[in-house]
Length: 221
Image (cartoon, rainbow, N blue to C red; front, side):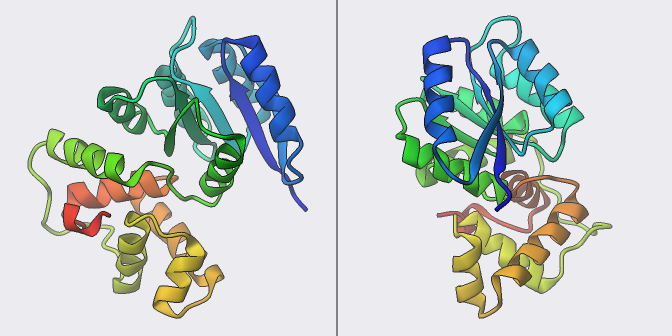
């Protein structure tokens, strides 16, 4: 089994090291590096190229959100999961705009955090459904007029169906069952969608589709 390579970034040593030990007990997860501040997180991400970076939103030298922007710029294939003690909309919006594919509170259980890491590795998004709707509403409207005209990267009908179901928070397996296709076919459609839209996660793809007018807020849970 190929393990998911994880980078942890948090300025509290006890929390970081404890989380590293607990995640390391999962047979499919491997913590490959730990960072104590945002600058070190960016540096280690560049060196280690982890599959998923779990980053605290509030860190010295460089905030988790700014670190996320730099990591996504240099390591687009690394999915970023922001963990935070703050459950307010501006933080979530800034994180998603910065390229994070997920946002969880620090009081989440290790089991849920592990599941979130696996989900992000599969290209899924990790946001509470009610929070996701509010955030996508704000992000879609904050960019001004939604584009509805011709585009050089139109999605095929099946790709749009997959993206609409992904926007509802459905897993690859659930999408496959809904459309009566294989999980591998769902994964292929998502890879093609990401390539067409030049994004690296469902979160980015859904936001892009909202701005283009391909999805509406009614398509969200």
